[in-house]
Structure formats: C-alpha cells, structure tokens
Length: 255
Image (tube, rainbow, N blue to C red; front, side):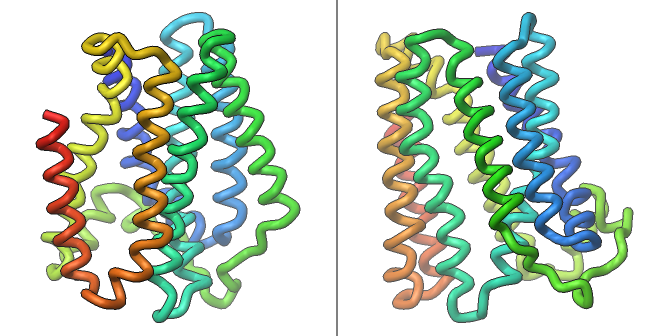
C-alpha cells in the first residue's frame, strides 16, 4: 500500500505540473494534437507498466501517465469549444458520465483479466488506449479555429502562474478550495480501496472490480442522466451543495 500511495502521488504531481502546460499548448496548436499525444502516451505508459521488471519502471510509467493524463484540461476545453451556454452543463456532465462508464467496465474487466496474470490488464489497457488514439487520428475534428488561438505564455503555462491567475476571479476561490478537499478525500479512498478491502474483508480482484463497477455506475447515472433533470430545476449552487452533502455522507459511511 505504501508503494501504491507513492505511485498515485507521482501521477497526481505530474498532472499538477503539466496540466497548465498542455492547456497552453492546446491554446496555441489546437486541442486535437494534444489529445492525440495524450492517448498515445497513455498507451505507451501502460505498455511500460506491463513489461516493468522492477518497481522503478512502474514509477517511470506513472510519471509518463501523469504528464499525458494532464490533458483532462484540454478535453474540458474541447467540450467548452463545441458547447453553447444552454447545453454546457449537460456536455460537461457527459465527461463525468464517461469516467463513470469507464469505472463500470474497467474494474470488472481488470478483475477478470487479473486472474490470468498481474500484467495482463496493463497489456489490455495499452491496446485500448492505442485504439482510442487511432479513433482520434481518423475521426476527431479540431474544435479550436486558428483565429481563436493564442500564443504560448509561460506565465499562464505553469502551475504557480495558473494559481495566481485565480486572483482575477475571487468569486471562485471558495469553489476551488472545496474541490481541493473533495479530490483529497476521493483519491484517499480510491488509493486505499483495493488494499483495504483485500486485507480487511479478504476480497478477490473480481470482488474489488465489481465494487468499483457499482461506484462507476452510480457516477455515470448521476452525471450522465440525473444532472440533466436536477440542474435546470434547482440551479448550479444547490446542485453542488446537495452533491457535496451526499458525498460527505458517503465518506462517513465508509469510515
């Protein structure tokens, strides 16, 4: 579990450092090349972890994955580019639904494949990411017109500069602080879930996969369907409040 925690930390640290860099590059060169770079990088990362002879190479893979995983900001920008004010919340909800769907299918498949060897799920993930890359290469259009692009600026394209930019929008500082605590809580549970359930309850890989699949199903249901019904009726602020309240209750039940 100690190594698992450090692997998660390295991934998150790389995301923190490179999210602004990839965001700045996508503003200059467009969203499509950054997304394709990230998909190919994910494929390479999982392949490295699949063949890793030592724990060192697992860390190398996670560093690479963290860099490419920072493209979530670019994916969000892509959604913003193609969305109107009326459907923006719905479209961003689809990102959450996609993550939820991944958490439904991925852990179950990983749990099943894990019976055939610890490296097999990594090979499968590498192949899936490569297929994703090929789909993006041939199908995904560019969302940012050249006239809307801007120069790359290191003042914006670094984590410190990005945080300082938030001073221009004091009304969202509280929201950012809340998100930090939410992500700390969520990742603390995710990082330890497999180790805890196997140690405490003797769960197998398959049982852990099913439990994560159930969690993913609920996330997909809420963000892909319920948010479309609830948000227009009660508004953004109350939707966030009720969501965080239920999240806190869930954490108490875990404890």
